[in-house]
Length: 189
Image 1 (cartoon, rainbow, N blue to C red):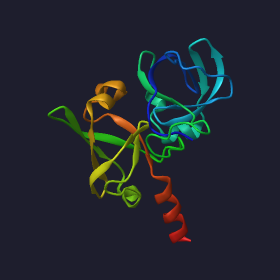
Image 2 (cartoon, rainbow, N blue to C red):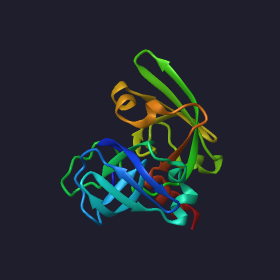
Image 3 (cartoon, rainbow, N blue to C red):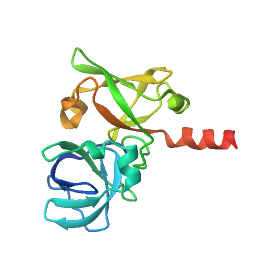
């Protein structure tokens, strides 16, 4: 389980079709540990100093943007929440629901207005002033529509995550609120 509070940005060092190595910028991990990479829960298969190797399943490659990553790309990293740890953002599982696209990036004073477009069939899972994970970052959506929402990104989040490298048209991982998913499942049964 994760919180959507990115601890550091890492960098992809090596890449093969179903595996990559990330420089974790000093996060201390051990083999078998869970690590959210751009919001995707992965298992640290091998750890050597600051470098972590993770395997990518076919399902992960189909549902996320991790297959787009190349050496040199910066990624948002968050280690798994430990019992008694700070719960700063919202509950994220690292189970990406779909891929969205950056539709707008607009400076508003010191804040940045970010608009994300996504498959409208997921709109029922997004609540105005609820929670959404965008590349593993806990954000608060507003102006929610059929297949889009906006978020105001404060300067700290903009500068300390890979959002600052995003451009209009870029793909992002989206994880919708777990409570909304359970309510929808219960309602549909």
